[in-house]
Image (cartoon, rainbow, N blue to C red; front, side, top):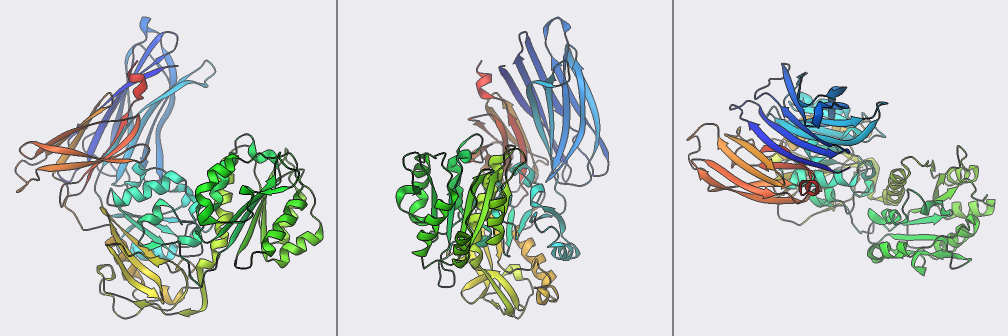
Length: 640
């Protein structure tokens, strides 16, 4: 099936302080044996107040000859932040010509709302039988500042006390587990600042991390990370886009943090088949420090003996990181799965490694993996080695031997089935490898007293010292311009801020989620004022409502942008030029100049390199940004 489409966008101007609404139209065609063209238009009202009902008008135009109908399913939804509401999902039959539908919706609050309409063809049995065509539109309203507090899936509710304190301090706080966090940059626009509260890196996908960094540096939103056993380096954030935006570095080397070692043992050729890709094992070093150690051992078709990756035993991560893709590409797994032999080789290698602290092994096996002699298990225990095991079960059968190995060495036992196997394995790899970074979390049962290093606007009227704290993650303050170290414990930062690009970030490395261990902080009279001020500071300076309307028209791959003032003459000194920030579907960014084209008006254009959803943000000095979500159709189809 070859689909062609043309999408155009029309803006319905808003009044000052009102709601800015975008209307998207799409012309979509598919070669179904007979020529079919389906055009989707979404029309939203120019003003909507929360709690008031409004109409979403959708028009689908079918130009199939002879008046034949097209049966399909129409879905209209609205996404605000991490919450998606389905307005309607129903089977429809399109007659020839225009088919108009109107659906009632209601906004519960102000914010950035993405409205999507999609149409997919159905066969005679009601199953989806063709491509899904869609168009998107956005409603942008400036309400009260909104904070998103993301908690770990493993510990939901740990930060409920902080959330309540922030709400009592006047902030609008939305708390959610990481699996409900915004998945893309458009959904992040609903929040002025995003707080990652002791959440490990593996609970996010790669694109979320890139979007979080871009959302701050290029779009001016706040980003805050709070400490704990799963935060900063201890949470596997080393080397991520989020770490690069923070005021602290997670990869530190000190006498307090000796290197750890992470070893992958492949005892089954199952893990180089089907959905799993052997190259994913490089994720085993993704979040490790350069000074940590890594090794992978397996049987190769070239030899009847266990072989280490690269032939050099256990490697230093800093030296191995760049070589891993090639080394993994050269691996040729054998069907031999002699797990005891692999464990013996691992023990021998670890006996010669005396400068490491945490020792972790991840065994990849299957239902047929061998039993493990008790002396081998005892040797692993004496080495203080923790072994986790993954089994690709045969049907519903796991492996009792691997389950027992994990139990005896204080590891974890996983069973990974075919459905979603690759994603599950990637999460496990990230979790298991970061366990050797546990030493980065400094646990002080008797407590320590951090010191205030400088006065900062984020502290407000706070005077005196911080209360005693019983845990923090060891990090290193950046020396970049725009970084301020506000508080520390010895040589390790407790509180630091950073101005990066258009946005601001905050790092608080202390553990305040566990209220039983942070009672001195939660009972502190300045707890609420401090964190309310910190999050308010991260949002940036208060700005006035924009005096402009942004209009974006899409014709083929070309976007035409126009800015017009709501009130003529309101700008005493209008800038000669404005800049539109374009965020691509692949999260690359580009600036597009908007030149003056009349009294206070601006225009510019941009050719999209590929199809997908583009986020456009334009900031007028001292005014709130204007944002639009624009859908560009498949460009290859446009050339047909």
